[in-house]
Length: 212
Image (cartoon, rainbow, N blue to C red):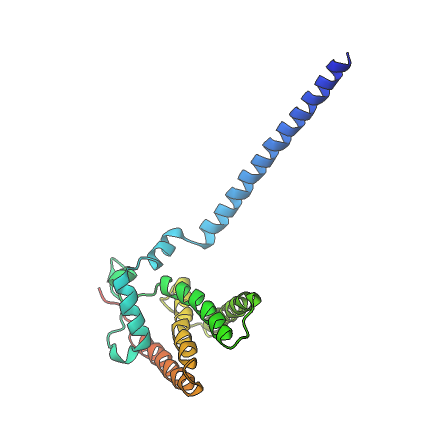
């Protein structure tokens, strides 16, 4: 009789565990559906694939364009059936591969520079990344508020704003690396990259018409 009661208790515990396990999986599936819905609503996977459609040739030519924009004249973007051509086929198109890699490289270079100055600590990387990310978000918010308040219309997508806001990390990396040579080299690089950034923005605004 006692063995029977023990078996009933064990079976009850097994049933409770099974019901709890089923509820857990149902809750997990529901959360997964909600998260997927939010992601599909605000982030288009197909759009992200477009911004990462690059190759080695594009990356090389794009870095040259970012560092030497004075040598570039045609800043218009080619369109195919009202859709922009993929970055690997259109040098002037925005991409997210170079900006994302530049952001990570910038954080690592900051750590390397501080290490050369014997001021490095593991927390530096996290602090640098968080501060750079905060500044980037603030910059994008300012751009969005400005365009909204002043009712400025633009053909640029939200990912374009993000890409163009992050291209500056390429110049910042160059400034940090040249700063290892001498302080004078750092300031020379800073002036040059600032002038290059200003030239890119001005010529971009003056050549915003598409090519078909």
